[in-house]
Image (tube, rainbow over all chains, first blue to last red; front, side):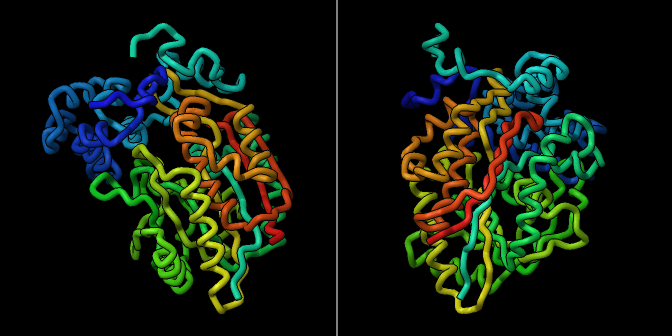
Length: 131
Length: 280
């Protein structure tokens, strides 16, 4: 696969066609959580419910452990992942805070102070991270 | 004939809808935001459009990943409110305008925009939050709404230039509809924000304010912003701003800026609102 310019953006997994392909069954599982009956079935036995979907074992483990960044890396899209957060009675804000490694309170405080500055977050190269 | 009289740019953050639905609009966190939308509500009450064309994006609610249309127009009579995972928002269903929607599709396809036709679709916060922000909490929405859903979730979204040209084609299509209708077009989403990964919470005030200036005075500059620049400078989800360029394209060359408001934060989002009246 060719390396895309957006892969240089730090702390970000752009949901492109390859990631969408990889995450298709994972995202279909997440989409199923729009229905209350499915949310209840999932809560009753999380692993059993996820077995209805042809996701990889890696993806399944990340779902059960709520490893949000890992789920992004494995092709989950944030709007679909939010349905898992909602099923847990959590918000977008909570999910975003978990992805940043902050507590929700710290995250809210950062936003109230004007949010995260783009300075220092433009490129992996600039941060000395390997792409 | 029908005429697009004005455009509104606004964010559509789901937390804004939740704040209204849960009676939290008067809390200190939310109060400045809703105060900032009061002039827009007053303007809307004064203008009273017959039809709103709502350019927005679905958030994995009407469309899962089985089919991903780049541009889709809702041609149905009524659009139910989606259950996004916490139950549907307690807002009225949305009434469409099937006749004008059908005309739009026909005219746009002949103008080389390959529109997906949705005779049935649920609508999510992307469409209902802008209605709440501009019309409040009525028993039923005071006008018809034609949903125009744009894929901005799976990269790449349509380019800013493509969106701007679509806006121009929409203006032409509306102008060729014989019935007298007053139409307001919305461009929604944005402004700067990122809700994924360790970089979540990114806000770029300078980028946003320059974008608002550009809508008013120099849309041709905005049209040339490449997708990578939105992602890098204003956050992964800021690509939604291309939808504002559909709105701007539909207003013709000359516009008058009536109102603008900018506020950080609503959840993870920098909120922007602008009203532009068409003078063309």
